[in-house]
Amino acid sequence: MRRASNDPDERFSERYAASGAAALLQAEGEVLGSDYQANGYTTLAQAEEIGVALGLQPGRRLLDLGSGCGYPGLYLADRFGCEVVTVDPVASGAITAASRAERDGLAARHLAVLAAGAALPLRDDSFDAVVHVDVMC
Amino acid sequence: MMFTTIEAAEGLSPAERLLVARSGPSAVLTRTSYPGLLASAGFSDIRYSDITAEYRTTQQAWTDAMRREARAISAAMGEPAFEQRLADRTDALAAVDAGLLERSQYSAVRP
Image (cartoon, rainbow over all chains, first blue to last red; front, top):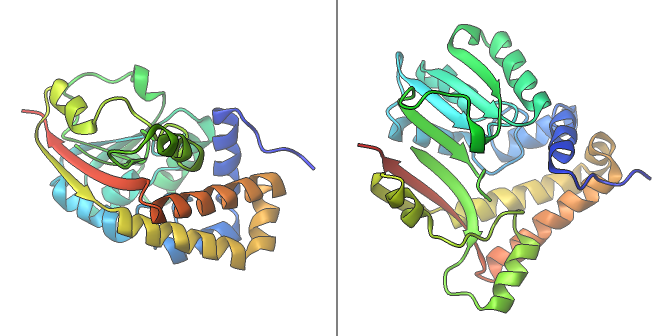
C-alpha cells in the first residue's frame, strides 16, 4: 500500500488530482454546493457573501491567494463579472484553474499564477480586492 | 481584503494548544493575532466574524460524505490519503466540539 506523502507540494498535488474524481465532485456538490474541485469549507453561499462584501463587479480585479484549483476566485469572477488572478504554489492547481476558466469562458478575465504567497510576482496596488480562504492555517 | 482562517481558540493552556496543533491544519497556531498583523500592515476597518458553527456543519458534511462513499473516494484518493484525511476531519470536529478550534472570517481595508 502506497503511503500518503508528507511533502506539502506533493500532498496537495495528489489532492488536486484526486479532486476531479466523480465521487469527490459529487461530495463537493453536496457539502459546498460547488464543482470547482474544492475540498475546504467555503460554501457557495459564503463565497457569494464574500463577493458582495468585497464589492466585486465588472472592471474590478480580484486576487485569490492559495486558490488551489481556482475556488472561490473563478466562481466570483463568473458570478460578479470581475477579473481574477488566482495564485497557487502547486502546478496542477494552477493548470486546473486555467482549464476551468477556459471552459467557463473566463480566460480573458483570468490569469493563473504559479507562485507562493511569500514571493508574489505581482505589482503593488494592482488589485481592487484580495481573498484567501483557509490558506494561513 | 477578506479571508477565512482556522485558528486556535483564545486562552488555551499549553497542553490544549498542543492538542490543537495535532488536530487542526498544519499552521493552525500563530504567535500574533490576525487583527494585530493586519493593523501592523496598514489595514484599517478590521472586522471579525466567528464562523465556527458553519465550519462545523461543513466539516461534518465532508466526514459523512466520505464515510458514505468510502469505497469510491478511497479509490480516487488512495487508501492512505483517504484514511489520513478522514482522521484529520474527525480530529478537527472533536477539537471544535471541545472549544479548541475555531474558524474566523476577517475583512480589512487598505486606505
